[in-house]
Image 1 (cartoon, rainbow, N blue to C red):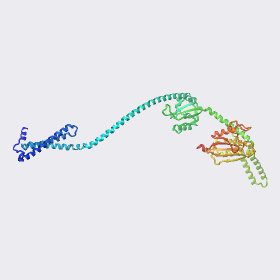
Image 2: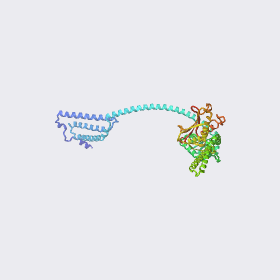
Image 3: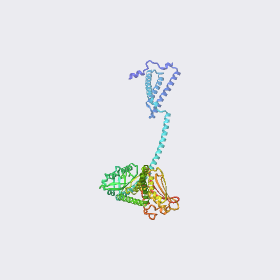
Length: 550
C-alpha cells in the first residue's frame, strides 16, 4: 500500500500543466479562477444537499441526494486538481480522482434511472394542491356530517326519551288492559259455565274444543268425550250435509256466522231439536281459538209448533167445510146443471132410438153432450173433494191464474144468484209459485166470498167483483180482489185479520185470520186497502219460483 501511494503521488518525469500555457499569467489566472470558482460551487452544493436531507428526513429517495452530493464533491475535487496540476504534475492522482468521479457519476446515473418511475409517480405541486383542496372539502364535509350526526344524535336521544315515556305509558295501559281482559275472561268463563243454554267452541279439526255443562247435559256426553267428537258426529244424518256446508263456509270465510235449526242425536239415541247460532271465528292467538256456538234445545218448541200446525190445519179444514156449507146451494146448482143436461140428453137418445129407423147421428151428438156434462160434473166434484180433503200440506208449483179460475168456477152460481158481475184481469205467462194448491184456493175463495157478502146491501149501483193478477218489482205474484161494496171502517182495518174479529152478524172471525196465516206460512203478505171510489181491495203477494231461486 505505501509503495502504491508513492507511485500515485510521484510526479516522475511529467511536466507541470502550466508549461502547456507557456506560463502566461493571464491564461493561468483564467484557469485558476474558473476551476477554483467551479470547485467552490461544487463543494457548496453537496453541503446544501446534505443539509436538506438532514432537515427533511421525510423526503423521498435520500440515497439519490447522497450519491449526487458525493458525485458533485468529486467533480469539485477534479477542478481543484486542475489548479494543482498547473504547477505540480501529479497526473496519476488526478486520474485516480477522475476515476472515482466516474464511478460516482455512473452509480448516481444508475440510481437516478432506477428510481425515475417512482419519482415520476410522485404527485406534482399542482396535484398536491388539488389533493389538498379535495382533502379540505372532505374535511369540511366531514365536519358538516359530524355536526349533522351530533344533531341527529341529539334528536335521537330526544325521541328515545319521548318513546321511552310512551312505552312506559303503553306498559301502564297494557297492564290495565290485561287486568280488564282477565276480569272479562273471568266473567265470560262464569257465564260459560253458568249459562242455561249450551255453549261450545269448535276448533279447526271440527271437534268440540270446549263445551259447558248445559251442552253436556243436552247431548249426554261428558266434556272429555266431546273433545273427540264434532258437530257432524252428533248431527242427525238427514241434517248432516247442510250442517257440513255451513261449517265449511264459516271456516273458509265465505260467511261470518250462521243460524240454523237441526236435530242432534244424544248419546242415549234420543233425537232432539236444537237451534245453533255461530259467531265469527275467534282469533288464533286467543287461549281457545275456534268458532263459538250457542246451542238451544228447542225440542219442546218444535213439538208445540207441530201441534200448532196440526191445529191450524184442522181449523183451516173446518173453515173450508163451513165455507163449503155456506156455498152448498151454489155447489148443488153447479152439479145439478150438468146432471139435468145428462138426463135431458138421455131422454133425447131414447126418442132418437125409438124412431124407425133410429136417428144415430142425433144419438151420437146427444151421447157426446152426455160425456161433456159428465166430465163437467166430475170436475166440480173433484174441486170440491180437493177443497175438503184432509191430507198433509204439500207444496208444488202452482199456476195462480188457474187456481183463481177454478175458484171462480166453483162460485159461479153464487155470483149469479147474488147478481154480482165478475171482471178478471189475469196477467198471462206469470211465473209459478211454490204453494199448497188447496190452501191457496182457500185464500182466494175466502176473499171472493167476503167480497160477495160486502155487496149484499148494495142496491143503488151494480155489484162488481174484480180479480186481478200481476207481477211486482220484487218478482212477487200479487192477486187483488176488489169489490164495489160499502167499504171498511178505518177503525176496523187494523183489526180485520185478528182471530175472532168479524164485521158480519153471523160471522166467526176465522176466515181472514186463517187466510193471513196461510199467506205468511208461504212467506207472503196479505193486506187491505180502500177501493176507489167505493169498496175494498184485499191483496196478497207470494214469492214466485223465479224470485225464490234467484
